[in-house]
Each structure stands twice: as C-alpha cells, then as structure tokens.
Length: 107
Length: 128
Image (cartoon, rainbow over all chains, first blue to last red; front, top):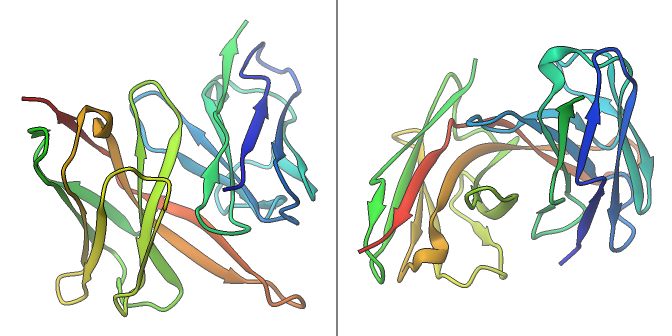
C-alpha cells in the first residue's frame, strides 16, 4: 500500500494567515492526489482533486500543488470557518489511502 | 443535489455481522461515471477506505482489512450495502458511504478517483 504522510500533524494559526500543509507519498503518485476538509462530527468535504483542481463551490483561497511524491495544500488567507482537520488521499492505485490528518487550530 | 444516507444498527455484538445500507437520492446509482465506496474512521483517528462497488456489481476491497468484507449494490432501490462479518471491537468506527467520481484525464487517459459526496456517517459500536 502507498503510505501518505502529512506534516505538520497540527498547526496553530490566526485569521488572515497564509498556511501550507504538506503531504508526502511513499512512492511516486504523479498528480493523483486529493485534499479533504473535515470538521468535528461531520463528513469530510472534497476541496482539491488531481493535486491542483479546485472542486466546484470551494473558495479560491484554497489551492493545491505538487506531483510525484510531494504535495502542498495552501490556504491564502485563513477564515474562521477554515479551522478543521485536513486529509490528503492518493488515488494512484488501490487501496486508496489517506494521510493521518493535519489539525488546524486557532492561535 | 446528490444526497447519501447511511442506515443500520448502531450496536453489533462481537463475532456477528455488521450491515449498513447507503441510500442515494438526487442521482442514479447506475451511472457509469461513479463507483460507490465505504470509508470508516475509528474514534479520534484518520480515514480508512474499505472498498467500492460499481453499478454492474463488481467490487474491490482493501486487502489490509482484517475483517471479511462484502459490498453489494441494488440499482432498483438506488442503494448499496456493506457487510463486515465476524466483527471485533477494532471494527468500532464511524462508517461513511461516499460517491467516488472517476474522471478520465485528457491526454494521458489516466483516471482520477475522488470522493465528492459523502453521507453524514453512522457510528457503529461493537460490544457485547
């Protein structure tokens, strides 16, 4: 199975900050990488697919980049509703696997 | 708007079978553009993909799961189901059903798979 490792595991930031979350794959996955946001007690929500494509309805302050083994999710200016846990997921092959999550907290 | 809803028992005894159903509304489960997945989340932990089923009935499962799994589909009811047999306490989790969009890339012909619609989740506790 392809292992996905996110860093940091948790992050404190303030409204208006620019933040970046990193995801590393245990082997090259081209750009078959998706990002999700999960709030407590809720299902995950798709933000980015194919490494850099913004899902319909997702604010443009979210962006993704990377290919091969290293990927980033960037939030250009944090809003109060962005404090949540973020997961990356590879779809290069099955079984699909997720990173362990990055918890974004208010400073 | 596509909506998914999980249903089933919230408590299952060890060694018994966990069964959940996902009802899909707002779209046809028979579309060839999608697979239909089950994903679980152990309390306070990350996400684990269990497997998916296609509308024609073919299914693929995560071989890392310790518990025997079956995912089936009923196109007449616009539903798909999950069955985990001989469960243990380690199968206690929130179970999500999710639509899995398969998108072919231009040029390379490769396929992206991503979970674009999710159910709200169903907490299943395995305990005697």
